[in-house]
Length: 262
Image (cartoon, rainbow, N blue to C red):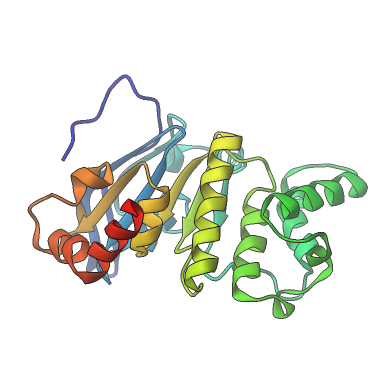
């Protein structure tokens, strides 16, 4: 594993993480750092706990051991008020969008604004309209309910909600899962554009090789209950580990590499 660069600012620092469900240990002594302004992709086989890791970082799965520092603060040692302040600095796109079915897209985007900010209703609506536009949805999508949206539109609506509070970090859980290749490529392009225009840090759980090639500055591989490799994609894919070689050097990995080179 590449040695961390002490001169780089890390906005997420996970050290010695252990997560478990009952007696079943998902992660043991797991370390990962995420640098300010990068897109970090997290990959691994089924059951390696990619989404569990994300949930541990954002406070939805308390670890059994280890520390999670966000912006230099120990998240699990913080007071409720301190945690709330930290949480306002990130946004989350859950797998499938996780939209409130009884609310319109605009109302979904306004939900975190209403929860955390004391703003006039008209201003909250303006913020929702702006975030909906930033996510690539047409203006009229704001009045629609999740059931009226396609899979790709639901992803974008979830992203608009994740951007509602002008976050510094965005967490994405399998953002292109279920999308057709054209829709997935457009979503990848959107993520890169938002990262560059807004200065976002992106923590992305994915299994999509095309997405890794199109978006990620670094990739972390989960296996054996920890991060076994972390670095630029070209470096990680050469690591001498059976799963890494099977994943990156298999037919789909070769196809993704060829597509990037073309």
